Length: 407
Image (cartoon, rainbow, N blue to C red):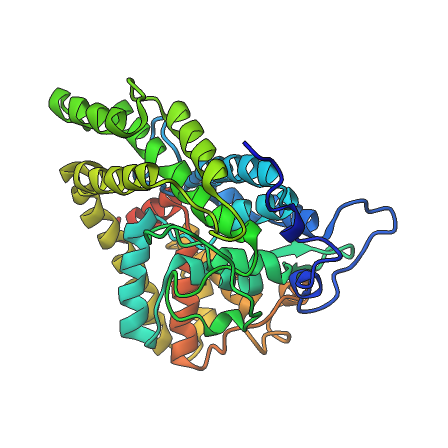
């Protein structure tokens, strides 16, 4: 098997896309002794942030799991990082770029996984006439929500490179496609209107996109087996399905991932793109269909979807009612005594991201990030609630919900 087939198209300082790939909205402060690359700086900025930390308590497939062996959103991004590193390293691409994209690709996920995303999308469409999808929200989070303290301990936005930001919004792994190739144009990423609308800008981002699917399909099966979602007949049918295509005689996710990676590396080329053989491409589609029927629409998950919908709707409506108050911030602050968990965190959220508050609170001066809400504007206030909920973990949303409904 030929190694380094994509080496000539790796993103490095002689590549024609290099300047655009490393571009940032503004200059990122530098340390004289820093030895990291631009992309590894992005990797560490995400790694040390709160939005990344919260991924450990966000749903991958199974909600608010108490089982330590079930995959969370944080574990998933590391699975994707592992798969994408292996592929990119063999093909000769920039592994630091794939690592940065993989670590941050799901940073825009809402609590309760795709069900939370669906619920917030309905609220967003009804309340502010926009769409909510996690790839778009991921770009929004790294551009406008996520912050890190600078050398003066003042909070600043991430300010990631274009290549990593592009990889986040263009990573959609839900769409079935083969022969994946990057686009040539560097575009305003906020003009993208739907998931999977455009191809990524780099080969490295294409690798992460296909690695996302390789990483989650088999792991979702492992988790379902751990939680006893399958009967004996379903397990036998699944085993036959996988053996029919791959020859793997056991339900072994490690073996499945290995075979998919090898098949992809064997068949991919600069001319044909990132390409699985017909056999393994059909296997991926069949496993995805199987998972949809026996995992994602399982009656136990369907029951929890109703619960998560109730939680998100309740929190949104409760906070939305505060806009009627003349002194919004003061009213929210006063209610911190009755609803300490929810109202303290929401109050601090508004302080950090709202405009024209410098005379109202000393805390405001610590936050030198973008101010994105005008609290006198109802749409902006509703957007603040949606952004606040989107950042929650499953566990935090459940705790807040019970705080609201307890008397």
